[in-house]
Structure formats: C-alpha cells, structure tokens
Image 1 (cartoon, rainbow, N blue to C red):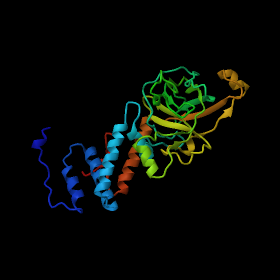
Image 2 (tube, one colour):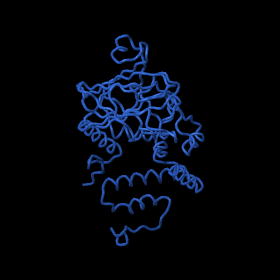
Image 3 (cartoon, rainbow, N blue to C red):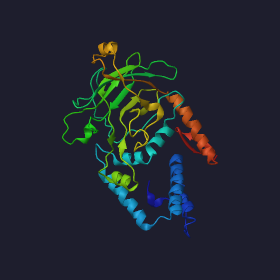
Image 4 (cartoon, helix red, strand yellow):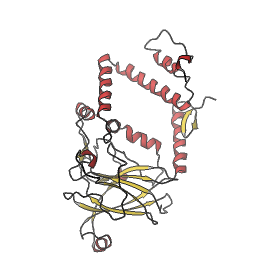
Length: 329
C-alpha cells in the first residue's frame, strides 16, 4: 500500500482530554478488525496510564531507554523481553487467557526465557541430565484426555537446570545439549525419564530486568521445577511445569509460575520400582498425571470467556479467526 495516498481522518485542537479519541480515530481505518480493536484498547490504557500517573518527560525517556536496553540484551539463547513479561505477570496472564482449562485438566505455567528448539529426541528411560553433582531422580508420567483415556504420540518437550541452577544454553563453552530432550508418549499414554532433582535458582539478573527487580525491592529466585511442553494435533498445546512442594520460593516465584495443582513431591523407590526402571532402591521418584484439553474444548471455552469479558466492558463481541472483536453490525 502507498501510504502517501492514504486518506487519514483529520484531527485538530489536540489536548490532554481529546488526544486519546483522536489517536484512536487516526487508527480507525485499519482493515483488520482485530488489529483495530487491539490498538483501540492499547491507546486507551496507555494514555490513561500517562494521565493517571502524570507521567513526566524524564520518566517517559527512562522507559524508552529501559526497553532499548532490554532489546539489546536479547540473543539467540536469551529472551529478555520474555523475562520482562514474566516478572510483570503478563506471561502467565496471556497463557491463562489463550489456553483456558476446564476443571480437572492440567494448568499451564510460564515458558521462561531459556526454552530452545535445539534438542534431541530420546527414548523412554533415558537420562536427560549428565550432571554428576545433581541428585538423580526418576520421573514417571501419564498423559490422558478429559475422559481419562490415554493419548499416544504426544510430543513432550522437557527441560531443567543443572545442579547449580543454570540451563545448558547459559554456558558459552557448552559442548552439546544437556538437561533437555523431547520424547513421545507410548500407546498407554506413558512416558518416563531419568533426571536430577530440580533446584531453586535466580533468573538472569545481570541485565535490565534484574535492575528493575532491585528497584522494586523484589528477589530474583524461582522455586525448583521441571518444564514441560505438550503438542499433538487435535489438542490445545500445553506449556507447564511441576514445582517441588515446600520450596522456600514456592509462594514468591519471581515470575508468578506456581499454581497449587502443579505442586509435587518425591518419594523413595521401593524394590519393585527400582527393578522395573533400573534405579537404586531409595532413589527419588516423581509421578504425575497430565490431562490435555482438545482444540475444540479450548476453543469453546476461550470464545465463551472472550464474549463475557467484552460484555463486562459493555460491548457486544463476535469471534473472528478465533479472536474477539467488537460486534458493531
């Protein structure tokens, strides 16, 4: 499109009181209803924030410089913007909105900044960590649908830190991958692997997000956890994690990822478990049953909640390409 030939709405006599409606008017010709709605709400809340806080020019420039620094900190293996989203609670909020869960299904959690697609697929029972300083553990899991039926062939992405609380991608001199893998559930919906007991750790605090946490007088620690991502056609993707109960940071996770339903505990392997899975008696064992939601279930629930959210704002909504927009027809 030749922007020089665009007929923009005319705005004039701009004031603190009318700048918002004029900015929305300038964006009103967007042909995409969803983009138009997103920027309508963004401008409304952004301008209200400035008016309510009486935002100063120095604060505005400090914000610009902060976001610039966040961008400069990003790399192929570190996403500082995701980290910023995490510590502001936005990541969990967006996941909860976009991937609603009916009762008795597994809740989502945050992706975090250190997920990578550079990963090897392994067989059930393989060790995903080769950290000799970590405490070995066995993880036994099932994947079922809402009716309790096993789901075969789910791609499971798993990742954790080493015993020092660092992910493999945080080492500049790393050789190969460690502490992460993918595998697939078997015909009975089972998958299992050997790992090390998760430990609490600080999120990266050497960048602008870390400096922000200091200014907010917040700590930078996450409770011990294992990350999981589940994908299979016909099912809503699930990003989640399992958190160790009674971790010292369980109730103050720096990125707001912990949910009561995701808290787990280890038990000691008895002789039968030890023999079946080739681990030492007394080894740490973690069991968990994951429940996935179908695309159809998630879509129906998302649409229902989207319409209700707009109704609460006094707007009638329609769903376009799975997303809500105001129904002005």
